[in-house]
Image (tube, rainbow, N blue to C red):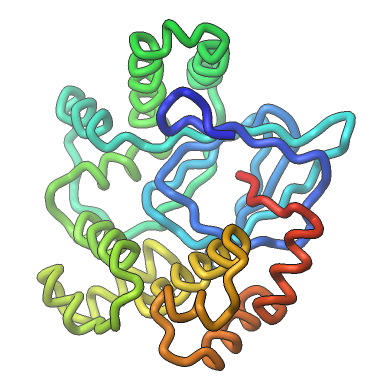
Length: 279
């Protein structure tokens, strides 16, 4: 459910989702009000409950499973998209002294402290008074981002805010692939565009996202194709062409390898179960 607060989304599931579902996480912070979940990132699996928050600082192709949910006690969670303008302003005001650090994954789970939980609670309650949203929502969002910057994984966000360093260039590379995923891909050209060697691009890109640039493009293409198939009932060949595949057979092979079944089989199964990604 998209709310009246920009970037703030609520989620609910009345049943467990034991099969991992691939989807693309945007830069965001997620909290669980009820239930628990795991997300898999490359060869890592993170588990979080209502005592944690999940922080993603870059677009990442993940797999998630809801571990605890029932009709009488559903899984409930909320996500807030990261506002880089707010984060950058807070970063400048706090004037942190950061040294260049080794590349680190763009996903982490942290302990949900009382102050951060209280800010999220106030953001949810604000939905009951829509006349106050324009004035109060930015203030609460700003507080949430401040708590995150000062928290245990604040260095992840601070590195994103920096204007230098490999992480900033890799984040730019991630955005470029996401925005141009339909185009033919060349790691050599992208590395030159990011002012990096091809080896450095691949090394830092894999450290941040868990996969290579080419694999990332493939994941974005497949997930966009799946979205098209589920939302507009297109056939597999048309969806493949729209996301950049020149070969429908190659698309079907890679789709089956990623999602476990052929494209149209997946569509029919998903529509029957009204499947929706849950954060």
